[in-house]
Image (cartoon, rainbow, N blue to C red; front, side, top):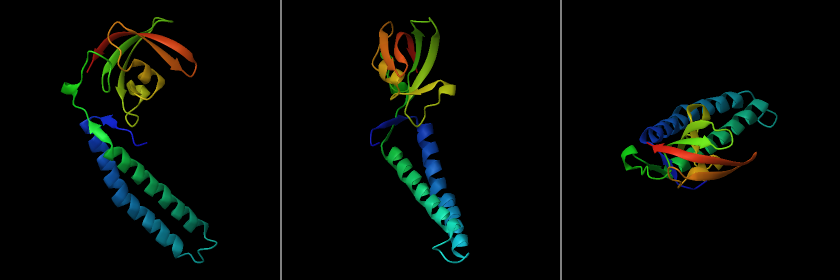
Length: 157
């Protein structure tokens, strides 16, 4: 997962805040849990100690993954987005040519994707199919449930 992640400044700030939280309070809580478990006796047969150590490993893996995402993050400003074609952070209004339904999505990084908010990942099948298309063009999307055809109606920021 070493690819570039295009994010807004707000999202980068949120990720940095989360990382700080994980490194400070998160590590302190795990250290306390390990210490309490250690005080309960023999470590060979101490399930609580094993669980705390496993939680520590998962926590450190989460920190490493978040550090990787932040290291590969590139901030994209709204005024620098080219709306002549679909790109990261664009809002795209599309019409499904099969059922004539119109939808609007914002293409974002995997970290920001949230379908309920209308944000889809650029690495999703629809995101991949829309990237680089212009208004009026048709996009053929290979989704898990078959091929879909969309018409690009508008591109905004």
